[in-house]
Length: 322
Image 1 (cartoon, rainbow, N blue to C red):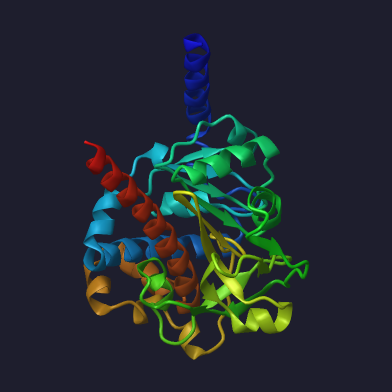
Image 2: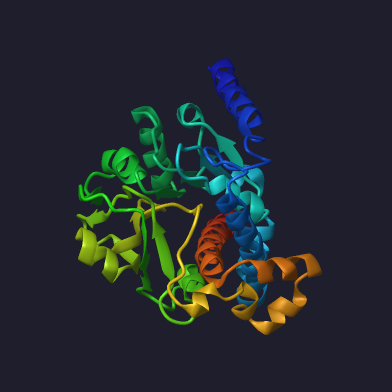
């Protein structure tokens, strides 16, 4: 029995070592690094990551301290064919481990971890069962787009589902439902309603359990066109939580709708943060348009705050048991 247990631990360690360097450099999976859109969004994520972390240290020092304590094993990203959360994490300098879809069923998840499932979430039933247990025991599971049908409908069939009305490739305005929720404050950085890019054939979220599934961000434009308004939802399961969002964390483009959107991001950020930035970062703030900055900044802010919150939760639990 002990030999079997040791073998499982060795296997998990080997999985991490095999995949922890995947996509550590260069363009995300299925993105052409010579594509000008990639270069534009890369710069946008770089300035957004710097800005989001600077804001976190000023506005939420406890969260910032927890984020600084995050280790690679605390954050697992399951690769997908369409989303590239690991690219955002790398630019945000957040430690993490990347594994492929097949390895998702071999990892022994811990309740102190945050697990991201990139779209399409093409993982086997065994992996889904392990993730359901992981959440029940206290883990944080974050999924995007097609994982709604491929993961959540199978693992949590009474909570949410795909409404079978795929979106077009377009941008919609979004609204934060609870402005006081620190996890989604990053969506309110800009004046007016921020923009959110929908991938072609994104899956609108139909809520089945209206009592227990909470809408964090919604879009009236999305509802008018595709019948459902939720953009980001969350629900608890046992001691843990599941968060799902339509579209992707890594955006390959955005959209400018007015003159302000087309202005340089340097005109949008708070003056003190711009002045704090290194000269090279200031130049990137000048080269990135406001619309791209707002979209990527929302993604980065949301990702890092959820990881930090999960780390804070595990640290407090550890303090109680000691």
